[in-house]
Length: 457
Image (cartoon, rainbow, N blue to C red; front, side, top):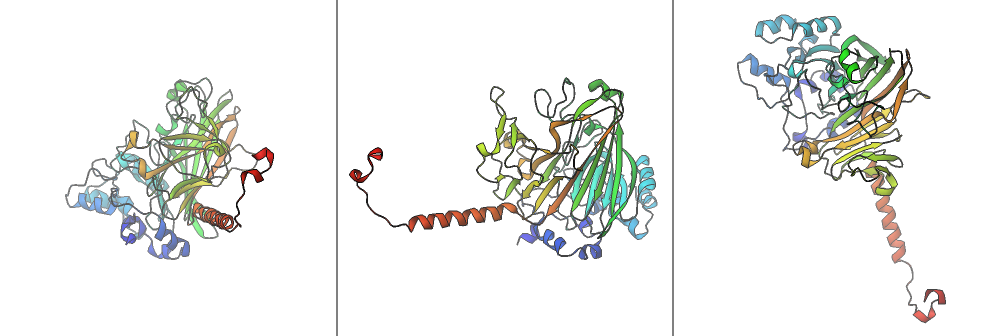
C-alpha cells in the first residue's frame, strides 16, 4: 500500500539500473524506507516529463520545482550524453538550451556518467554529481548550495518547496546553504563575529557566485565516485560588510549513500579574524509533528535557546528540559547546541536516519556545534511539517585564522537504514514493565499509624 506513495523521481532512479542493482542489500533497504511522501504533499515533476511538455508545445505546471518558465530545465539532465548523444546539437534542434556560459563550463568540466554542468532553477548553473549506483546531487554555484540529494531509489534527502523562485539577486535559503562568516541574525548571539553589525543573516557567502576549480573521480573499495571543487574570494562588496580578505575552497564528493564536504578557509589579509562557518541543512522528513521524526545525538550538552525572551537567560542544559535521549519538536525552535556528540542526525520518520558528522582531523577545531531550527506553523504553515532543520558547523566557538594561514574542516552526510530511538524506547518500556511487575509482586501488609517509628508519625 505504501509502495505507491514513495517519493520517486523516475528519470534519476532508473538512470543506471544495472549499477543500482549491484549496490546490494543496502540499496534495497533504503528503497523500502527512504523517502515516503504523504499524499497531501505536492510531487515534483520529473525532468523527463517537463522536457516533453516543451518539445510538444505543452504548458508546464508553474508550481513544479523545475518549471519551463524559470529556465531550469536542461536536456543534459536526461543522461543522453551517457549513450553518445550530442546533447548540445540536439538541444539546439528542439529549442532547449543552457546558457552559453553553462555549456562552456560543461564542455570543460563534464565527466561522462559522473559529472555535468547544466542550468538549474532560475537559470542558475549547477553541477550534477552522479554515482554509479544511481544516486545524484545538485550543487548550485550560486552560494555553493547542495540543493538536492537524491538516493539511488529516488528518495530526496534535502527539502526545497516546489515552485520556489530562484534568482542570482538573492541567496537560496532552502536545501543546504553554506553560512559564512556569520550564522544567524548576528548581534549578541552565537555565530556572530565580534564588532560586526552589517552582515546579513547567515552571512553573505550564500548569495555569492562560486567558480569551478576542477572535477574528478575518487576511488574506494566500491569503485569510483565523483567530486567537484569550487571556490570564491572576497570582493569590495563583502569587505564593505566585513573588512577581511579570504579565499574559500569547498570540495564535494558523492558516495552511494553519503556526501563528503571539505571546507578550506584561507585568510589572505594582513590581520587575523574570527568567523562562523556552517552547513544549514533542511532535511526532508515524513512529518515533523509525528513521534517517529526526531533529532538524535543532542543529549548531555549545553544549548542556547534563541526563542526565549531577551530578559530570560538563554543558556540551557539538555538534562534540565529533556527526559529522553532524543529531541522531538513541539513548536517554534531556534537552538544552538555547543560541542555536541559527533553522531548527530535526524530520524526522518521512514525507518532511516540522516547523520551529520564532523570528520575534521584530530587537533583541529572543526564543526563541533549544531543548530536546530524550524519556525513552525505560525511563520511557515505550508512547509514546516516537511523538514527538520539541522546545521553543523563552528557556531558557538568561532574559528580564528591568522594572516596567510588556512583552516580545514570536513563534514560527512550519510543516510543509514536504522532508527536508534525505537531500540531505546523498547528498552525503556521493558524496564518500566519489569519495575512495575516487581512492585506489584511485593507482599502487601497493613501498617497502623501507632506502629510507625516516632519520627515518621
